[in-house]
Length: 369
Image (cartoon, one colour):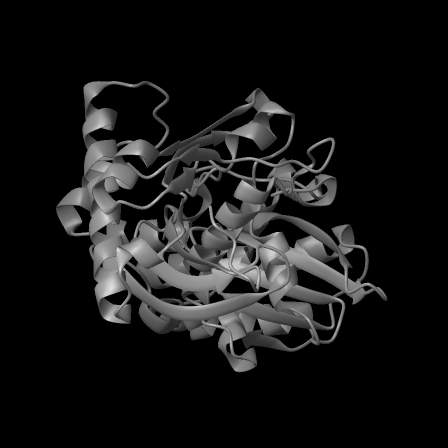
């Protein structure tokens, strides 16, 4: 990878998140350290048929024909997303140094040193004519880390000049937090991270199961219901919430059985409260209580969830867009940023972000054809 005189690379970051909404594709320039210039972004939703096929791969650890076919089609969809993003931005593929390709997590069990993201990096490089870094989590998990979350170093790079300690909360299918401490004289800052608990996944699955749609738009269904305190207490009894950070989760780590008998409205309200309360429960595990929470990901569009978070946390809880970030693009941008760090041999994770024993580089490089 050629380094520009200013140290910046032009990269594409790609994310297919646990909510299974579609592909987020971001174009940015970054040095992989403390400089991030966002250039363009788009989201391409999955159609219902492919989403169902992808859902059918969750929890699979085999390399059978079904998983292989979905991986191939997922990769080709990402190649199309790259082409569409570059067309939108008016940028030629030859001007892009690298693609950071997260793929899609179908199984995550770091306690057994297993994590699996499907997505064929070599196929994507061949289809786009651009070098690719993928498989960002495996090295961390193999070394004894949780393999997630991987976005904290990117959040730290964005957070210069903001009041500290700051929490950046990403609410996708699973929710994760990056705690960023005060900046030192050299501009560095301590960072601690973990998955807090469920994000949107349980709510989305509940709405889908009741034939109301794919998600609770704006939190309207939850707003029309009442939280069942007994069911919420059962959900919060999961041992995960007593574990210290860092820690991580699989999308389907929680059993929604406690809400099974509730009305659609009350179930949505209770599951939304579950996400909010699980975020609040992480605060005692952080080095100090954050003075502000910035929320990114799809969950920030859920007004009911945002109100519950503000009530539980007792400090400002705001959309990351209010500080000039694109809350929909951040996770895709992060994997472009991490791809550059991978090529520079810099850590993608730290002991305080994933529990890995030492700062850990990672990623697998696929050169352009």
